[in-house]
Image (cartoon, rainbow, N blue to C red; front, top):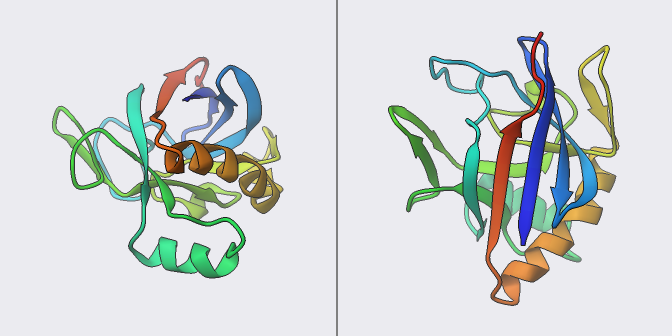
Length: 159
């Protein structure tokens, strides 16, 4: 399974994008801005292709197990090295999770799923509904033994 995150707008504080699953539009994404010097909680992950696996530990996993008991099987964690990290040159991230939230204040470098976005206010809405729709598709594929990748591309993010 291939997820494609296509970033379409960055206002210097927040980035908006679209998420496709195997070529089919799934939802919108809200993220932090692009940055060239890593500052915790204020930088989106760089363009590239990464693995997604189910992370079954940590506070997000515990919260989502309670919030979504009908389907939660672990957090969708984006990584390219062991230990749930992303390393590109000297830039390092850890525990980049696809989760719910509507603004860049709800994320520390993680993609947030949303049903819609407002490009004027750079916010999303319908995040929980988007998550309820998207998550089971990806999690089921992983549970069934499939591999999941995410390709992140900056389409047009100029301010």
